[in-house]
Length: 90
Image (tube, rainbow, N blue to C red; front, top):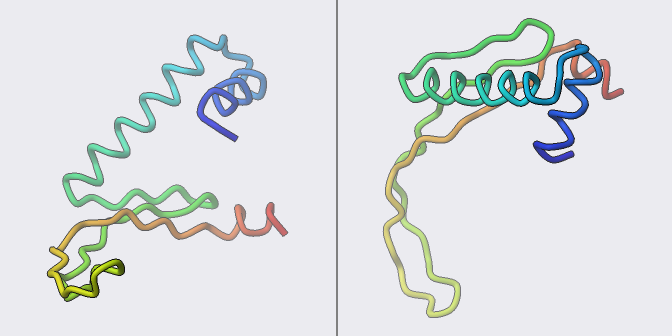
């Protein structure tokens, strides 16, 4: 499912117009990104939890040349599915 299909599904499920569903999905994505950037954790009971982890710098290798290179530290988004979501998938 891509973003357009998600918007269509949200519109059908909620009874919103596609324009309003797009605004809702875009607002969710924007707000989630802003909060994660500030280091906040987002917990949606039953759905899951979004959080930010920081991967430390490490030594890597170029697969083509075999040369060693340093891979800098970076922040990644982690998602842990909630029990209701896991049950829905089962």
